Image (cartoon, rainbow, N blue to C red; front, side, top):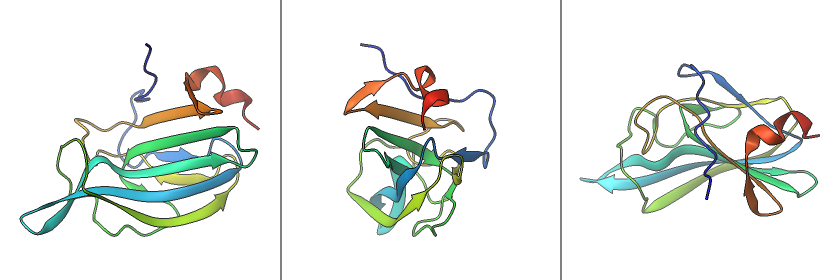
Length: 136
């Protein structure tokens, strides 16, 4: 099985991330509690996207921050660990194709600055580079 993700062609932290099509985004933070302190783990700051036609869903993960939503846990309060004990659902909003929705980072279980990007068409994971230019 081929796994398509981790789009990171020489990008730096805080590089803008754009909506791939018209739709809705939900801003989320995955966390665990360590010694009474909530720390970003797993996907860290991430966005779930749903296209307006219902065909495409996507995840943008390990983000430094969001555009149009405030974080509950600071991006600096992160620990490299898989899994989470909770997920904050911060905000859902409508977006247009090409709109800035977040910024690349290194939150959660990330070993370096990159964008972990997953794309599904009708629930099946696909290679994002095969369709990004063609999304409407």
